[in-house]
Amino acid sequence: MRLGVLTGGGDCPGLNAVIRAVVHRSIKGYGWSVVGFRHGWRGLLQSEIEELDLKAVSGILPRGGTILGTSRTNPYQDPGGEARIRDELKLRAVDVLIVIGGEDTLGVAVKLHEAGVRLVGIPKTIDNDVNGTDYTFGFDTALSIATEAIDRLHTTAESHDRVIVVEVMGRHAGWIALEAGVAGGADMILIPEYPVSVEEVCGVVQRRHEHGKNFSIIVVAEGARLQDTEGGPVEVQSERRDAFGHVRLGGIGATLADRIEERTGFESRYSVLGHIQRGGSPTAFDRFLGTRFGVKAVDLVQREGFGRMVAIRGMKIVDVPIVEGVGSLKTVDREFYELAKVFFS
Ligand code: F6P
Image (cartoon, rainbow, N blue to C red):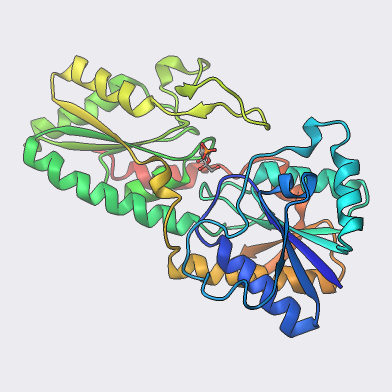
């Protein structure tokens, strides 16, 4: 048996742990060989391939990013894309594909599987918004980075009597904002799922001043909208769409800081954490989860569980149809948001 593996979409700490686990399990557990396609689906379309043996994955466990490279290539943008992928798999004698990605990459996997390609999926995203799994690797690392940043911003906000708005990643789901915000003791958290008005945010800042706190930390997810603009567009850095139709988000932090200063008169600044949240070495949690996913994905191939992806439910690694992971996103539910609200000032 010969496996092909690819990583697609935004990179994510823990991807190398997954690749390493896939290679070890395949070679040592089953005597199979593994090749990697570089830059996600682009590697299959453009024949960018490399042999993955034990030596190729040696030393990669603590490394951030992905040794295979990644891209947001969508093979279905090109009418001949699917056929080219089939031809490439045949040419390279790849029997089964292991697809590591988020909703877009896994969405392509669903279509290919329906077209008869044998594959299994591994969910990945720092946003933690893939359905069907409690966690995706990368999220814990992003959370730790965002929490540390909030801690750091706290001390400077306090020294200068400033409001600091921290913009974190989270296109459709506010998991990073919510959990890092709670862990970092934010005074208010804005997420895409539950819009609030500028008045409410200013009310929080004002109340803190009345109670003798001259600084505030507001955490906002990049995809959050203000209630005043609900139905309006999210703040975007660039209208240019990627191959899956996503615009580049960013700007809500700056807008919010401006509005707070305008309305309350308190000096306000903002900080955009951006890709810092995605870079660098994965936490132990993400290395371990990625390793478990990698090993179980190879076992899933052995059981011929094609069209399915590995997932974590509670403490257990299970597998579910990939389509369950991509039909809709796992957004923050009311219970989590209510918990965060307990700490809003
Ligand atoms: O999907 C993960 C994510 O990090 C989102 O939170 C963010 O909006 C997006 O990727 C950024 O993508 P890119 O690196 O392509 O700008």
